[in-house]
Length: 197
Image (cartoon, rainbow, N blue to C red; front, side, top):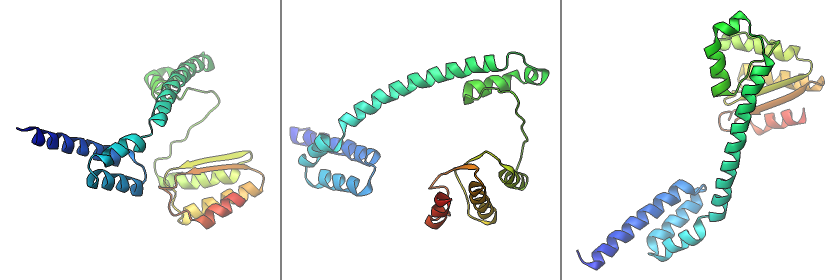
């Protein structure tokens, strides 16, 4: 194998690595396409340009520092939750003692400590959930906090929106978080109505 063949193989390998990096890291499609075309059709210069100007090394370093700091904070929060759980429920009744493994999992894996003076009702499906939810919203006196990944603006969704607007007008604090991607049926007009209310 001569030097020219080896150089071509190394260049093609480098080009493939750079193209894969461009596709996996660049968020905007147009920008990624521009970098790809530049790297492929202007040999060496295109790759050099991307390596010099296409990668934001400063942001990457800053992000890595933030990740380390966030991890330290997360570990401290986990310790605090365990301490809170032990202090909040110093005595544990028989129902808690019977489910001690579940309690440990809630604290350890979900960061959800036990608290006093709560009650739970398990709702297994939409037929059970939505009538209860609409009733709870209608009876709310102080605040309503809702969070949805997928929210459909069907009959039930429309009832909920109307009820949330009504409760807000009654002075109840309403917070409604939904994922924009998973809740595409919520149009700008509905969003405007909610914000105004």
